[in-house]
Image 1 (cartoon, rainbow, N blue to C red):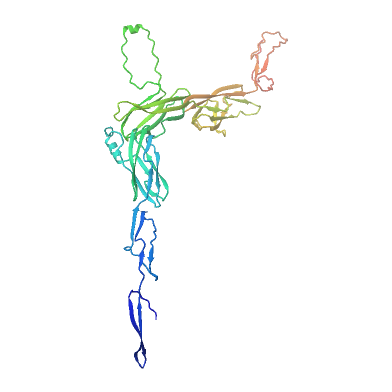
Image 2 (image 1 turned 180 degrees about the vertical axis):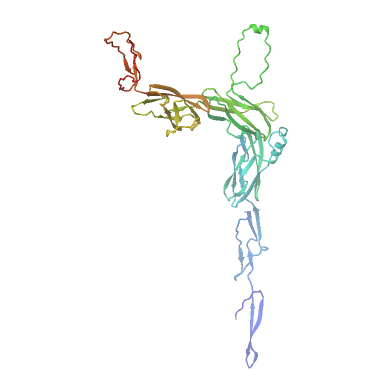
Length: 516
């Protein structure tokens, strides 16, 4: 007989035996039982967990006491044991407590670091944003557009603006300032830690420099590079006011008086006429000048400017441009920009393979006179590309490197920096139809489209024939006696560099005159 009781109580029952064919409940066995459980008790009915971080598991021991000899079975219900705890979020320290950027350049990013140190065992989600405070400029100095911008946009940004600090770790947050005026600015960082304290970190910075910018390289120095002298050098660019206040700009060149209008010339008095009337020397003028010299730029406005300069001789010229400005409603001007301008004024330099070309043609017996050619190399050793224009007079002419005659008129020849151009100079020895020695001298003129400088190559053409020179071309024997002989001597000179083979003969159609 097995008894498994689930209830605390006293049992009284009987086990009866039925005999088939005889009867029911022939025998009966009385069964009694009593089911009991030991009284279990908790040693401490209150369990205090203390301070617990949110969403982090904690454990505490509960002690049960059984005063009976029987084993006890238990199950826990929240109502039976009192649980005490204080839940809290992460503990995060933010440092430094204040950020002072000091003096920083306007219109450029400047960064400082904020550090978040999580002192707890749970992650700490955070979110940071700026309070968007007004800067320290009086709103009376700002335009309506600038005042609206000052209220709506912060000059600081946070990267990243939200995230999670891992348990027992430290991360950094970058605070970036981008100022748009040369005054002091202030703001506050609101750092909110989820389920924890929030922090307010004051920040401040002072802008230095200028909010006037250009679309091309200009300040603080610009090198215009090489430029041909006598040819105006021009550099165009745009200036923009990216600040909050209106700028009135005034440009001048260091070492020269500011631009002023020419005054009317007063009438010359009689006393002044008697004085020395030596003319005053013309004032020295700067090489470079800006147009316009004065302008007013409201916030966001853009204007075009032109920097021009020229010099009559090759020279490296350096000058300093100075810009003063009246900013907003200030009463005086302040220097906001200096620009060192450098330009190398040059003359074209062409390396010519020969400064003089000589042609020598010798007429041989039975030979024909043919054009002669000499090569010429022109190399550009200037700092700028050149366009070369050549000209020459007959009997000389120009050909390409293959000795093909170039068509007239000759076209400009472009020669890049450190490049060489090859051509040929030709000479026509048949420019005269006779058999006498002759010499022709001309010059090959080299001009430049970029500069009035002129180079020359001397040309000499010699045509040599086997010529003889006689002391006289007329012999007068005078009166001579009959049957007598008179001899006259004539000096004959080989005036050519060739060997002359000659023979004498009388002209068959030239009959002498007999005098009787």
